[in-house]
Image 1 (cartoon, helix red, strand yellow):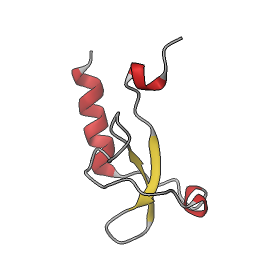
Image 2 (image 1 turned 90 degrees about the vertical axis):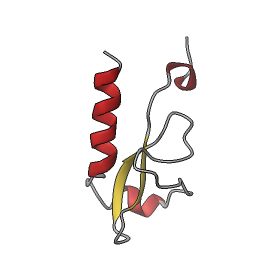
Image 3 (image 1 turned 60 degrees about the horizontal axis):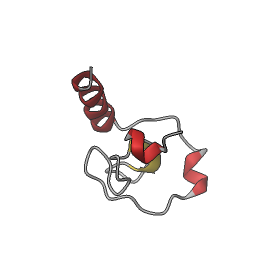
Image 4 (image 1 turned 45 degrees about the vertical axis):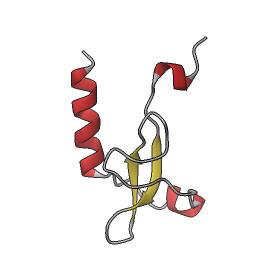
Length: 70
């Protein structure tokens, strides 16, 4: 069975938005940055449960990636 890395899957990461509020970002396939350009840091588990908000720039980029792969 192929690994996530082999499938080039995108994962979600709960980080902060520009105001410092928790928000879900989409990670690049190498998992070092987000699709909006934020560098990934260690995830604060308290943030994970504090929000259901998503980063709009990440989601817009993810949509473009998915449409390009059709």
